[in-house]
Amino acid sequence: MDAAAASATTMKAVNFLGTPLTQRITTPTTLTSSIPDCNTKIHTLYLPNSNPRNKAIPLLPRCSTKPDTDTTDNEKSKNSTVEPNLNSNPTNPSTLSSKDAIFSPIPPSISSSVTKGLVFDLGLEGSWDSAEVGSPVVKRFLGDEEERWYMWYYGSSNSEGSDSIGLAVSSNGVHWERGGGPVQSSQDVGAVINCGKDWWAFDTQSIRPSEVVVMSSSKVRASSAVYWLYYTGYSAEEAEISSDRRNLELELENPERMKNGGNAGKILKSLPGLAISQDGRHWARIEGEHHSGALFDVGLQEEWDSSFVATPHVVYHASGDLRMYYHSFDLENGVYSIGIARSRDGIKWVKLGKIIGGGRSGGFDEMGATNPCVVRNKKDGDYLMAYEGVCADGGRGIGLAVSKDGLKDWTRIGDGVVLEASEECGWDNKGVGSPCLVQMDGEEDEWRLYYRGVGDGGSGIGMAVSEGSDVRRFRRWAGFHL
Image 1: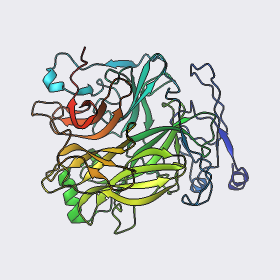
Image 2: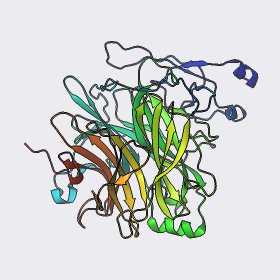
Image 3: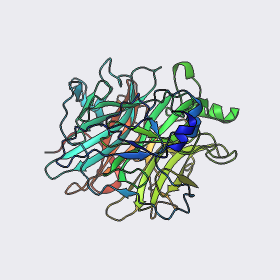
Image 4: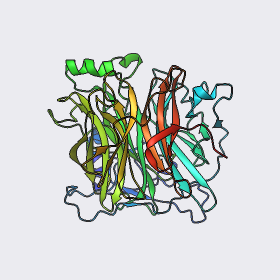
């Protein structure tokens, strides 16, 4: 289609449910769904033409689209209809049918003191996540007769390869079923999103999941709610950091932006991205307004987030009011910091500034806070943030902060860390981070804290539980109490 014909076509009807990750959505597509639901329908998204910059370059394999958004400024829009999914059941809670599905228990031959808290280890040799796992995004769905847990996480197969985002499922949030390769159906588990292939894209080197929000919106027209995945994408471009600050970054050895192999010693620039799905497995990237496809760019020179933007964690507050919490490195103050942005439609964002910086001198978060995870407490309505703190020697631990409105006046809870690296023999003795909070419902008056742990044997995903409703104390999971 030439440019004139493309400009004459204002809308395209696309169903992305079964669209392969390697296919660009450029023509109307009709796909059938294997979702075992009594009211299954083909859900059609209406999408405008591709980003104008794409007309001058060849079509490369990338599932990339731009949703129907109005042209008014986000702060002035009056007709937002973003709503959360009020039905807590996932679109596809069925059992697995993939021959690739693997049950992932912790090896019984290893001492329980060594593996305490570990619920998700590296994949088997040859699998897509055999070398590294992390950034857990865990969701619990309650049905009439059963509960279902989904966990999106990143993994890689070797230290020099690019990351993928994958999906594992569970019936209790402890024992997980995983896949050794890419998903093949809407009832499968395994790798679900690869790095971008377009040379201009912001996510060609690495991708990490940050949050999944289940909601519907008039901006993305579908007859039911969809999964919105907010993620961090890394390109080959280096973050703009002065030499003295760069040395500090290298000393801190931040695993979220440092790449091995050909990029050893480089601090890669990262930006926030968005993808949507109807089954949590087959995803379509949504191109933001930035020329790279990201939702927005880094801040201007001298602003606190001018080097990179990472870990966009999005919380639904009310209709037309979504909040994104993300972190960057504050060059002026020399600490990692967390900031907030606000949106009416989940796509166009307005930055509001920094909300958390470095902690007290000598504390576990003296060098700042990263990887925020924010949850609205169902009991008192307060906003609870778990974050990864960085101490002066680069060590990592997890702390908490609370706010009444989720916008300002964030207060750290207590003076210390709520979860730190384990003892010398533990699987996570090098550091813990990338927290994900889950508030349990019903009789279980407790919180679960999923996290990435790093030790002598590599990385894994662990779980800690609170002592009842007291979030000031977490202990590593050591088994169910009968």
